[in-house]
Amino acid sequence: MIINHKKILGIAFLMMFTLLLGCSKNGSNPPPEPDTVLGTPFASNASNITNTSFNVNWVILPEAESYLIDVSTSNSFSTFVTGYNTLEKSGSTVEVTGLSPGLTYYYRVRAKKGAEISNNSNVITVTTTGVQAEDPTFLKVKANALENPFYVGVAVKSNQLTEGSSYDTVLKNEFSSITAEYEMKMNPISTGSGTYNWSAADKIVQYGNDNGINVHGHALVWHNAVPDWLSNFSGTDSEFALEVKKYITDVVTRYAGKIQSWDVVNEAVDDNGTMRNTIFLQKMGANYIKDCYQWARDAANAAGDTNLILFYNDYATSTNIPKQDKVFSIVDDLMTSNLIDGVGFQMHNTYLSPTKEQIETDINRAVVLGLKVHVSELDIQVNQNNDITHLTEERNLAQKDKYKEIVTIYNALPKANKYALTVWGFKDNESWIPFSTDLNHPGDDWPLLYNNKFEIKSAHTGFLEGLD
Image (cartoon, rainbow, N blue to C red):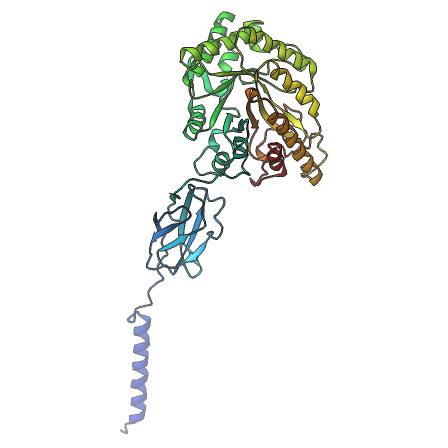
């Protein structure tokens, strides 16, 4: 038999190649390691804190190639410090510069590897050293610098008073007084006879007290804020009056020394110039207003708060003379018993009305009586007839002029008659006015100092100019 050595060698080589290929397929050579999952970094406390800078610090992740740093004055990171929005850096620290003294900042970190970005780290809070400079373009700063200063107020909701929020920052910069928009009325507080839900009211009062901001109480008695249990009260009229007395006494006592002023009775006069036919008038009689003021005064004095300022508050008195006359007849009656200290003029105005002369005539009736004046719920409509679909430049400037006009009027009052000028809310899109059924407002509107993005409007400039 003839042996073909070349053929045998070829077969052997083929078998060896097949064997090696099979080993490879069977995993004798291990596959490459999978990519490491990118973790979430941990931010650590700031260091080297000065008036205008601090160092952001974080713990390095072995798998990260770089880090993205966010720095904000809001713990919600709705805005960012210029230059520090997703700032990309390597290492474990970066210096943040160009900051303001005495201001609170927040930072967070994300890891990055290629196109992959991790979740946000924990948030670190840091306050720069020094004292924050007073900016003369802030409303309260300019008002405080006047020869006869007064509070610049704003209506608030308790959920806006979160440390580091946009509301918190604007409020502390711009305003020196707060009024609860709704949460300190009877309905949300009184849950039954002698039982109360204090949570929202306590938060508002505590926020003001903690931050050196005046708190104005609004309002003890209002026909549109009667709790169901009292509306359906089945007892006698005398027992009804005792429930109202107990409520006023308990609320005034709880906040004695913490609230400087109260609207005791709100909107008791109808638009026809007569007493509004409320449940309080029906069950307590014609003297119910004086009774409420007496109970508030007695409660404050018993609690040692002999300086509590009591206001009567109402709307549309500048243009409605019969209503104006009736309001001041109530005021005159309260003054005979030393039960009132001031009048609140709501001023839910439009860019066309009231006129300067109408406002001055109305307010001066309180001035000549020696009473304090509170422009208590200021906003200025520019679309009361629903004839525009956005804030036009013409209406924008007209609104600016109206804000300037009323602030100028108020600023000219004697020192003894000044108390506060309160804007009824922060942002246009949160105002009560657009599409209001109570106001019969047919469409959208832009009545406040800040737009939907919390940007300053020309109305804010008008307010500042009124302080000149």
